[in-house]
Image (cartoon, rainbow, N blue to C red; front, side, top):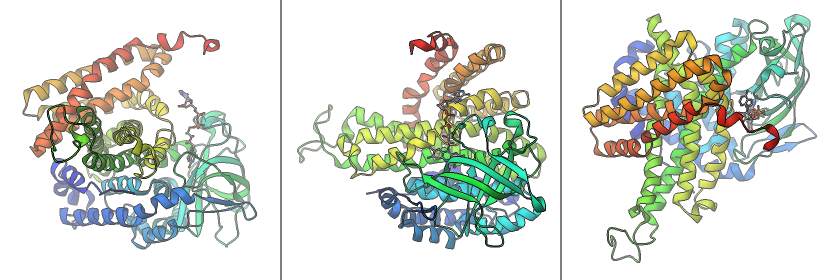
Length: 578
Ligand SMILES: Cc1cc2nc3c(=O)[nH]c(=O)nc-3n(C[C@H](O)[C@H](O)[C@H](O)COP(=O)(O)OP(=O)(O)OC[C@H]3O[C@@H](n4cnc5c(N)ncnc54)[C@H](O)[C@@H]3O)c2cc1C
């Protein structure tokens, strides 16, 4: 059972009051028809689609799962998904933010970010089929030849076909330099690919006519490691209607997202096309992975929101014990559990993490638009820096916190959360993978400290801190400003420690990575919650901010202590002693 209502009031507040996109988007995107009314009506339709079409088949998809048919090496997706997927295509959702030159609607990316959250909240498994297709559209738009774009983008954008991302192999997940799949030049400028891929989302299914696989493989003359990887487009069905040699050889049985087909794939002399230049595949794949990382980050947010709404409904109805401040509902045998401070702590944590997380996701979505559309190259560059820097934080922090929210929501329901009736156990199971795929959260943290913070001599990091300082400075309340300044001071101290220790000793940077990412996430959410409370003038937002400051932002000193403890306590224990 689901009680989910798309959180459109919060989204509208963020887009139109906090970030005021209606004022600069018409000029930014060159779409003079873009207005608050237009965006508003699209948001309403998104909410209807998510709650009315995706939500009703969420539970059935989990129960039905995907079926593998060894004789035909084919897969059927949950039967209840078919009609929902058709409506997704018929309503034009795949085209929302896709390039107009190939049939897309070219609407701002921020709308795509909101759409991703609502889809994940109502049906994460089904949304994986179209989420990865969106990533494939981005990678092809940016790196494929005109010929490949003309042939493959229109049916992907219309939703007639879906896309996949084929990276992982049995011997390599994180360390893609160990890829063994081989590609050799063949006739007519094509290539023949052979190898095995595992855990490929949507690798085979019956929801679309064709599947376009983006495959990482090595050419015969490839240098060793990640520098020797190339990217290939490998269609399931070739242009002349022949079945290509890429097959599903089995399905993974998983803890969650059971309606999403996670496939073992075998490439058997499959025909493929090289995308871009040889040996540049990993760089190209990053276009797709960055988009997918943002999508996965908001999966944490969406699933957390669905769990939180259920927890609030339950807490209002469930009566147990009496308020410590005296009886609140004398007509009832007990008071609602909402009266208990401990239950309030759980619910407020959920609410604060979701409101702050959504503000962060929207901030990144808006900067994604600026980085693509702004006429001034300097503005584009600044926005691009911010997106690069914040993408691992969105992916790791929002999924860690989203999972924490699902867990707190389950705890709020007591035993009822653990049983199937209220649906939270599915949300928790579905959310768990978001911390693992698209690069584990540990790898996001390494990317953040090792690549993103030092990028361009720390240009993006300096701009981020400046933006955060400016936002903090706009808060009227002196105590709020002081608390934020303290948080920002701690960030600076962590960065200094990292610069001094992490540059000389990479193990120190590796030890600090996750706590540094968490510290950034904690402070950024604090600033955005404070700014939201300031702009809205709403007492509920101020109370959420105060709660967050007291229970979450207050942890920054402890987080700094963990960072400064360095690697010693992690690396001292001999491997044999584990
Ligand atoms: C349901 C599901 C769907 C998926 N979909 C796809 C898909 O569509 N396409 C695709 O290509 N892949 C897909 N994957 C694979 C997924 O991206 C990988 O599981 C993930 O990247 C981690 O790789 P791994 O599982 O091999 O873990 P490993 O790389 O073996 O890592 C194990 C642990 O070691 C840590 N670790 C590894 N290396 C380092 C290091 N250098 N420093 C610090 N810590 C390290 C990791 O953080 C992790 O905690 C999917 C996986 C699942 C389960």
